Every structure is written in structure tokens, then in C-alpha cells.
Amino acid sequence: MSIQVIEVNPVYTSVIGLLKYTPQYMISKDVAASYVIARRGLGLKEQIPEGYMAIVEHLDAGELEGLKEHVKKTVKN
Image (cartoon, rainbow, N blue to C red):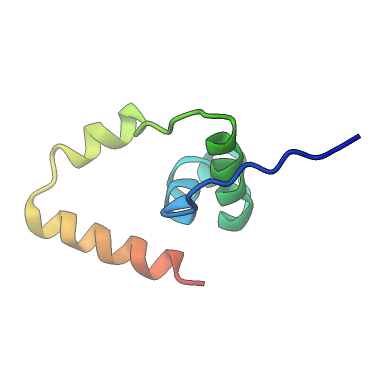
């Protein structure tokens, strides 16, 4: 028996996991990031949930910048 190693780019996995899987499954951002990495290894793509798009579309530039800063602080290890 052997194990296949598939390399994937881990960029933004913590952010994607935090926003997409942490609220849904009530898991840590690190576990959620591993979900994103596993999905990438399977060749699956992540899409922005419709609910997030509905919120983001109505934000002005200042509110978007504030949201970006909040996510940066939250994702810091």
C-alpha cells in the first residue's frame, strides 16, 4: 500500500476556511483551512457563498476596508 502526495498552494486557506467552514461546522480556523487544502487536493474549487456576496455588494469602500482589516486581525496566528 502506498500514499499519494498531492501538492497544493496553501495561499488564503485560513481566510477561506474561517469565512466558509468555521461558522457552518463550528470548527477552528486551522481545521477549516485543512478542509480547503483537502478540497484543493481533490481538484475542487471554492466559490464565495451567495449570502456573503449579497452583503459585500452593499458595502461602500470604507466598510470593505474595515472588513478587510477585521479579517486580517482574526486570521493572525
